[in-house]
Length: 346
Image (cartoon, rainbow, N blue to C red; front, top):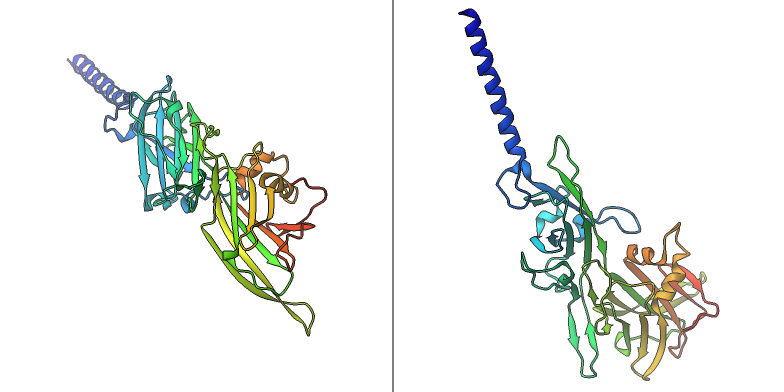
């Protein structure tokens, strides 16, 4: 009898153990696409923006709206989600995926909440293909001469992961890290005269022309209409400079600020300043070529021209004018560095 009782207890314990194993396996066996409500099956996506000159993650400070698209191995859309507002400003923010996308493609477009910067196509789950996911710069105004002006766009960010692997942790849900690249940059142009004559902001026009307004799912540029970027802010001002202890000189300036789409090292956008009083062009320069001059002033190591343009998101140019508002082209200041020009082809 004692042996029978012992055998019976052993069988019961074995059955109980096998039942627990079955339950555990059942919890781990999540549907790869559909959300079954089990929190243990969720994967988190962490977005970071450290592809900048400082190498510091600025996602929480610069992004407040993001849309994530997930495509299967056949490049068909299977899931998408948009989130925006204050949650993205929390360093602990993660977007929840209801499945493990290890055999999928992830693409994200992000911007600042409230900006009409990005124009994304309608995408239908189960039908839309990855190549259909483009991003078009908004804020366009058709002009009577047929040109398209762009003014006051906000920042645009892009990210793409091919078949990512979630990193598992005992303390946190499995997490995928998606790096973002910033596709916009700010250009500040300062016209500063060498005489005491005042400068008026309304006397000058500032434009940058480029054909960079349409981006593909992989962030390459697609042929599109040529855009003319114009300032979203301009102003005039003056500062007093003490040349000697007894002499003070006033330097007058006009400053314009523009936001541009992604600058490409193999393209030729032009920065043009026109004197509206005389109708004459003060200067028209190949913008990217001048920015490449600036790269040598930075400790960029083995950074390519394109990587420099993608990482740097703010440029400040100072051009010096003579008493007739002509450009003194011997040198300019770019991001506070003086660049001496020698035989530069305009």
